[in-house]
Amino acid sequence: MTPPEEHSGSAGEKCQVASSRNSVPIRLTGERWQHITGRHPEMARLQEQVLETVAEPDLVQQGDFGELLAIRFYPETPLTSKFLVVAYREIGQEDGFILTAYLTNRPSQRRTVLWKR
Image (cartoon, rainbow, N blue to C red; front, side, top):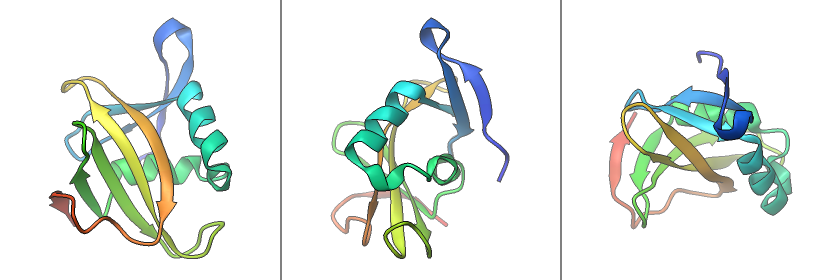
C-alpha cells in the first residue's frame, strides 16, 4: 500500500489522504476520526487500516445516499476476524472524504457491488 499522505483540510486542519479505486484523493479529517472512534471505540487503533481499505478494498458497494462503501477483510482486528467498511463520498475527480467506518461480520448482500477484486 502507498503510505497515506498528510494534507491540510479546510480551516488548516491536518488530515490523512488515500486514493480511492477511482483515483480520487479521499480525506480522513481529525473531526471524522473523532466521530468514528467516538461511535466505534474498537476502531481506535485501525486508522491505517481505514486508509488501506479505501486505497485497496476487496470490494466497493453503492451506499444508500450516493456514498461509496469500501470493504476489506481483516483476519485479525480487536474483535476477531471482521470486514472493515469505510463509507466515503467522492465530490469529483479531485476531492472526497470519509464519512464513517466500522467493523462487520460480512458485507451487505442487498447492496449493488460496483467493483470486486
